[in-house]
Structure formats: C-alpha cells, structure tokens
Length: 230
Length: 230
Image 1 (cartoon, each protein chain N blue to C red):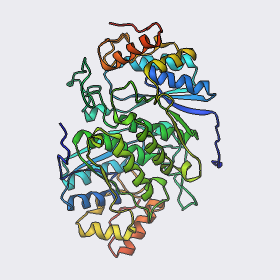
Image 2: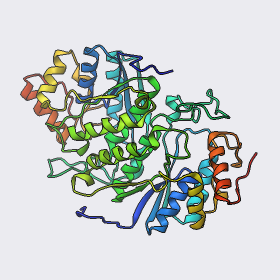
Image 3: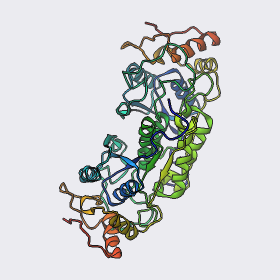
Image 4: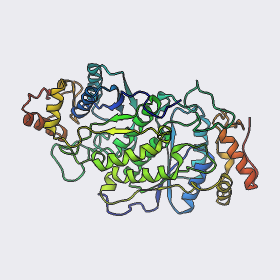
C-alpha cells in the first residue's frame, strides 16, 4: 500500500552517464542527504568507456544500487552517438548537432520513472545543463517542466497524490561552476569520461564538443584537468 | 535537412500490442490513409502470445515495417504482467490493479517518439481507452495531452517547428463501439489476443479483466466473439 506521502523520504534516482555533469548531479543529491539509486543505460552508444566510468563513479559514491539498463536505441539510427556511419564532428556546428540522440532524455527519464514508481521514490536527478551545452532540445528548462507535469499524470503514485520532482541542479550553471561545485563536494573527476569518442581505456579525443566544453570548464574554474587524452 | 512541414505527410507510427484495441487503432490509421509503421514491445510480459498476435496483425495489414523493440521492464518488477510472483487477478479489484505496469505507456510512447523523429513522422497512434478499461492512469486524456505537450518540446523536430500529434481514436469509445468500428473496417479479431494469461497458442483464460471487457464488448456489439478460450 502506498501512503499519501513519501515512503522513502531520502531516496532518489540519479541518471548517471559516467560523465562530468551526471557525476556532479550525483554528488549534489548525496550532499542533500538522499540515498541514491544510480541508473545508467547501455543504449547502443559508441563510447562504451562511459559505462565503465559510470561503474567506477557509482562505486566511489557507494550508491544503494547501480542499475545498467539495456535499451538499444541504435536500432533507430539517426545519431552520430549510436550510428557508426555518422562521424562525430571535431568542430562546433550550427544548430542541433548530429550527436543529438533522438528523444534520448525522454526515453531515459521514462525508464527512471518506471523504476521510481516501483521503488516508491519521488525524486529523480538529471544532470542536464542549458549553458555550456550542445543545444539539445531535451536539456532545456521548459522541456523538464513539461516532463514533470506529464509524469505526475502518468503514474499510479501520481493518481494517489504523490508528486514526482525532477531535479536539475546544473541546468543554469556554467561548466566552470559545475566543476567548482563538484570539486568542493570532493568529486574525483579523473573517474569520469565525457568524450564522445573515448577509447577503450576512457582516454578522451580532446576535439569533440563534449571535450572542448569540459576542457574549457577546467581552465575557467582554475582547477587542474585530470582528463587523460589520447 | 528537415523542412518546416511534414516530410512524410501520410506516415504514422502505431503502437501495436496485438490486442483488440491497438489492432483497431491500426485499422483506423490505415483507413485515414496513413502508411503505418507498427511498433511492438518485448518488455518482459508474461503473455508472449500477444507478440505472436502482433506479428499476424501487422502482416494482415501489410504495414510498411513492423518493429519489435526489446526493453525488459521486468527488471523493475512491480506488476503482475511482468512479475511471475504476482498473480493475475481473476476478478475486478478496486483501485488501480496489479496488472498495471509502472510507466508503461510513457516508456512506449517515448520509444515511439525516438523512432518518429528518425523517420520524420509526426503522427503516433495509440489505442488507449478510458471507458471499458482497468483504470490505468496512463490511459486518460489529460495524460495524453500532457505527453504531447512534453513531446513537442523534447525533439529536434519540435524545435524546428514540426508538431507531433498523438492520436487516441478509441479514448472515448466503449468496447462495443470499438468492436463495431473495427468490424466495419474489416478487422479480423480472431488474430488478436487480449488476455493477460493467454497460453502459448494464444487461447484466452476468459476470467481476467481484459478477457471480461472483451467478451462483454462482443456481446454488446452483437458480433460473434471469435476468441479461442482455454
């Protein structure tokens, strides 16, 4: 029986890619006192190194559980991150780039929502960022707000009066601010992998959008960049 | 390059479980002139017979493509439809029943959204019904409306000015009305399986919620029930 309030007041699901942002989001959730369930996805991404990073990060934070969910979005093609026939660009392009994975955050949040309902957890953390980012539509505040409204109508928990909160603690921070915040919380960024084209050892290309935002962030934060480059 | 209007004006994705409702939704989409892409899910459901039914239905309608997407929601447990330790009830219970699968329609629509974006399709059909149904929250009109609002903020297509329509042609029809409508469109309901506990041959238990709504619908429609019972 689900009571009309939070059963596990201090539990949260955190979407964890293994990159800099989601790792910082996990650190923030823990610093707020949540017992964290980390959720990663094997979604057909080229860059397997990020899942290895997610495991290391989840271990380092001693999460309650780390689930790696299998969902092969590469069957739809359409993104450089899941389709080997599309090259990951080495320079910033105008508009929404080819690294955009169609509906990715919507799919990931929906699976988090399913898990949240089973766990009776009412808080989901996602490390989306709308400042130093690649212009993906599903990282914007208006999208997250609409997702939360929908989610509260979608579930049995919602019908029974519980509310689901989607936390986006990084959404309005610059990459440098994110790094400073994580650094203050003791995040070991050497465990994280942000590169779209990282090699098997998790070493970064230094050239893709994600690498450039990350590298610039460390410079601007005045913190030594622990990233291993190829 | 995506133009600022529909590229494939007459294409739609139809969520197809292999049951009575989704099959009727497919018939309606085709009758409106859409070239249909059928999408089914191997989501860890007990009742495998519905996927076999979905294949037969997709073939009978000669869809452009029928994709069966693998997503194992049973890893989260929490529903009689995916968890063998929870029994499928033989009589109607009050409230939202144990056959409810957490966030199922949200997950399914999100994957349809991903495919729609890659195909550049702007129409998704889902056979949800809020009349003769089991009280699932993700079958209600307010949920669908909120989903559509969210979806139009989620995608590259949405940012570029395309709108996504989620069609729910059955949402306000009784089961008898759905059956009459499908019958007029030539649907062969003997191909479909609605039962939550169907056997390997697709024969129905005749006792679960889904069987009772279906059976009553045929009686009220005055149409012979082609369902094979165990």
